[in-house]
Amino acid sequence: MINKRTIYFSLFIALLIGISYIMNWEMAIANFAEKGTLPTFDDPGQRILIIVPHPDDETLGMAGIIQRAVELKRPIKVVIVTSGESYKKAAMSFCGKTNPTPQDFYRFGLARQQESIVAMRVLGLPRQDLIFSGFADGSTRFLWSQYWDNGRPRVSGGIHVAYAPYDTVYKPGIPYTGQNLVNELTEIIKDFKPTDIYYPLADDIHPDHWAVSNFVRYTITAMNINVREHMFLVHHPQWPVPWMAEKNRPMLPPVDMKDSNTEWQSFDLTPKEVDLKRTAIKQYRTQTEVMEPFLMAFVRKTELFATKPVITIPVVDSKPDLQSRALPHTLLKVYTGGMLNEEIYRSAALTRLGAFYYDNKLYIGLESARPISKKVIYHIEMRLFYKDQNDIKRIDLGVVDEKLYQYKRVENSLTDVIAAKPIINGNKMWVEVKIPQVNNLRYIFMGADSIYRNRLIDKIPWNMYKIGE
Image (cartoon, rainbow, N blue to C red):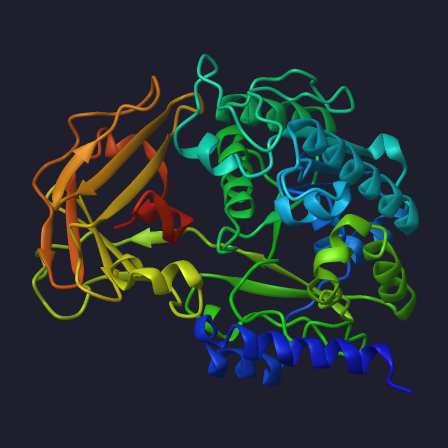
């Protein structure tokens, strides 16, 4: 008789063959064959706060952490930012319709909340320690970049509303804005006073994951609090493999993230914790019906966490040649290849970010897989944290048709910061920016992305930077 493990493995191979035109086989095999050990930790924290984008992420990333915290009687809270109601494929399966209505998506959101409640019960976490925020699934990247001010909420999601419609959430009726999400996270953190915060990794390719990562790191930095940060990964090309439960295999980082300013740690699970994690994942029935092999890939003997050190932007005495073939002062290298969006238009596939500070100006460089194109919109966004805790500024730049623009998206947006037009040479582009009050600046939180035909194609993950000596 063919067992379930064999079936899953066969499905995985078939899936690889079926989507080989967007997969990087070499990378998939490298991840499957990856060996080695990581630094480990065994103390989940004294007061643990977990913040995730969707119902099921808390179990995929932190089921072992949750079980250990419960066993050690450590205070723990889990915050789920969206209810995952806009995942159309799963919503179609849930309601049995090819075109679900807003009411169907609403009921689907409630069902996903209930699945998290049941899964947390399996892991030993009571309902009162689970917080639903009720922000719209698929909306958080827009709240981060464009819909920040409280007077301008975004109509979002399958339910198509501009506010949290559920009475089960932390603040029913809260309008969908970035500032409201920051305010809610700030309030929860102040009330709970965590020692350890677990949240998504900004390198995750799912927009809700990297946006929630940005919101959490922004909030921690704005509050200027001292906590241990643990970032987890769910969505990344050709990872994790294989798509099935591997109880005796550790979860290891993607091999292409070795140059991504990421420091990894591993949390070992006991056999009982592994088994309970698998049982908890099975409680997300709306999800296992459409992607059970992928979810089961997170049933491993370890859980994987990362930290992101602050990156120092060098202060230089002489200006490098910005027309050179190499990108001077490269600070980040980003893997490219295997993502469908990147294959659509290679000029939008971002590969490197560089930066340096010279003559009282900040120079930021982007490199793409193919020459910089007038058909692509390139964005560079910054949040500036000054030494005065309440002083946070914002810079939003766009290169459109090889012209440099600055946007005033919120009240604290800085304008008149562009010092020159972009310098473009083949697949490299530099912009020159005047940063005010550099002597009082703590950090620059910065990321970049590319837009082609109104679609987000690629991004440079957000990282924290400081201007060094």
